[in-house]
Every structure is written in structure tokens, then in C-alpha cells.
Image 1 (cartoon, rainbow, N blue to C red):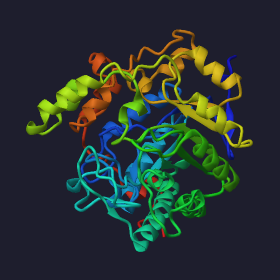
Image 2: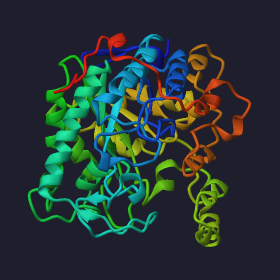
Image 3: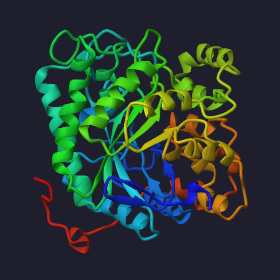
Length: 423
């Protein structure tokens, strides 16, 4: 049997195969952050498809860290029953689940958070929203660290198998790690060690909040692809080595910053129609010309984060690794695992198109993912539409799952929870 379908341990948990559903914003929560029937259905389908480890879309740990209107929240105890429904539906099918804990930093809109977005420094105007963030104060930083710890407590109370700290894609932790975003001259910036300090504090807060048998993982950038140099593969390897020394259970390797280098992050076609549709009327002509000029510049022929992954593997000892980005063929997946470069392979878009992908691969029905990386699934998100494969309108529940926006109807008592289940 291929190693892809054999179990592997992350910390004290045994994952049934080497496939990870990489966190993907679903646009399926209620506007105030509650889990909906759509979300539960989506992850039930993925678990039935035999994905070993499922990481739902990023969950905001603080009201000021909310990235998008229909993002799932984990910043309040009221969310725990719905989150537990999400956990239970995945566990019922034999898969494991981690919650990705996130703070968006400057990559959000004023109307989403009701204020000015925060960042380590106030130097870079956001190229999507045109807002200039405010530099975080010491009290802001302390509040964020506390928020991550409290969110981890809620994840544990909901029964999740662990959490993933989102330190990639231009979100707040990535912003502190990156010399492109972080121009501070205090203890939170100015050197690699100081830029790493926020991650250390967040990791320690999260680790203290999690039971010893749960996973604490991290998602990092191999490269930021920002206009000026940010995280490079060399710096990513240095950070990964430090994370390994701290005791992180799993490092997932990605790339890019959502608002600054989105197409470098996802590669493939530019979804011009969907992106322009979501723009204000006055921006549409210029946006159309810009998007069309980008078309054809981000094609790829295989996994595009593997070279950086190999560099990270050399310095992370026995810490399990996973890689996301352009993984489409079984031959590539087996090459990555058998070559010792990674212990898992992570995918996002392929699971949007084919939620039963892993089962079909195990049964020998397919060897290549049918996702063509048109990116129209992600383009739809800009218009607050649920994530789906636009090229498979007639597909099953995974393509219809965004229709049910009702909050999950649960009672605390039904889940064996008490109010105030965190601190």
C-alpha cells in the first residue's frame, strides 16, 4: 500500500492517512460568526471522503481580527456548541480536526471590524482596501496573545484534536514575522529574534490552554512574495527551526500574502470576471484591465513550495511537515512523502471540487486531481458567495452546501458543556 494511505503520528494523535484539508475560507458562517448547517455539511462530506486531517477555514480569535463578513468565530464561549457540532460530524466519520486560529492584522475592511485595522507598523497602505493600518500598541499585543490562548481553550472545550496558529498569508502573526510588514524598533521588531517574539508568546499561551494530548501546529510562509523583501526561504527555515525547538507538533508550509501577493499564493488562472464583479462600479474598468494584464503570468506545472520545503526539512529534526500549493498528482504526492521531504500533503482547491478525492485515490479510480486551478472558487468569495467549484454546478452536496445559512441549532446541555466552559 502507498505511504499516502498509511497512518502517521502528529504529537500524540495518530492520523489515519497522509492527507490534510488545508484551511480554506468557506464564507458559510453567520454574519456574527456562528457555525451553520452548511459548514457542518461541508465537513461531514469531506470526512466521509476519508481526508485524514481536516482544518476548517480560519477562525477569528478577536473581533478586531475578523478578516471577512461570513468567517467563523472562536472569540466567544457562545460559539462552542456550534463548533462542537463541527467536531462531532468529522469524528463520526473517523477523521481528525484542527481549528485554525487567526487574526487578520491589516488584511480586513473597516466595515468588517468597525475600526481601523491593526498591524505591527503603519507603513504599508493595503493595496486592496487602500486603508493604512495603525501600529499596534503594547496593550494591543498583550490582548492578542490573550485572545489566542482563550480561543485555544474554546477549541479544546469543543473537542477539537488541536489547533493551528495561522502565521502565513499576510495575517497578523505573519506580519510580525516579516521584515516587509514589521518595522518596529522595540522588543517586537528590529531583528529576527524580536520579530519571532510574538509567535513565541502566542504559542506558549496556546500550549498552556490545550490538553497535553492535543496538537498545536502552525502554518507558515516559505516566501511572502511581497513588493519588497519579506520572508524568504532562508528566513522561513530559520523560523521553522526555532518552532521545532519550541515543540510545535506540525508545520504546514505555504506562501504568499492575501492582499499583497494573492496570485503568487494560489497560482493558476486569474478569475477576472468574479473579482471585477465584486468591485465598486468606479473601480471596475481599471480593475478589469489590471486583472487581464495579469492573466497567464501565474501558471504552474507542479507543487511550487517543495524547494523551500526541502530547506525547512533539513533544520526541523523530527517535527512532522506538510506542504500545500499545486499538489495535483499521486506521483508528485508519493514523491514528496517517499523522498522524506514531507510527512503529509495538504490541499485546498482539489477538495472544493472533489470532496471524496482521497477515497477515490485509495480505490484507484483517479491518479490526477481534476481541479484546473481556474480559481473561480476563490473569486466568488470576494462577493461573499459560499466557496464552491464553479465548473461543477451539477455536483453533489459539497457544491450546494453554501445554501443553508441557518445557525446550527444546539443546546449546551446536549453536548455535555457548561456555560463559561473556558476560564
